[in-house]
Length: 137
Image (cartoon, rainbow, N blue to C red; front, side):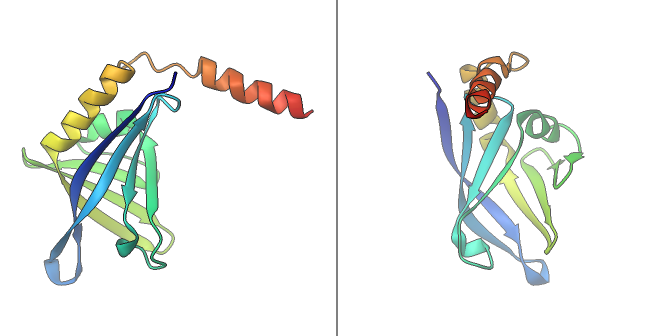
């Protein structure tokens, strides 16, 4: 049975003139997709008013809490002891959000209770997808 971890958090988005706006986000982890974490942003931060989700490796988040790291469109680094910055890159530009590090750490610990770090196996999920794909042939 798949298990979903959801946690409400706040992010402070960088705005013009060095100001930040605080927004609610949802951190999500799903045991059906054990290598990834997801952050759901409300529509008020997108140009089209639609909610958006960023998905990236759980390991990237874990590493970014300790030292600067980045992969593709997502870069994460600690900002002092209390905050972590995430930068998201799109063809339209970049956005950076600051999170409270303890909230991200709690979220990771909760996800590790569902699927232990280092034991993420894609076997069952991959097998389901392959079966579905082969059934279509």
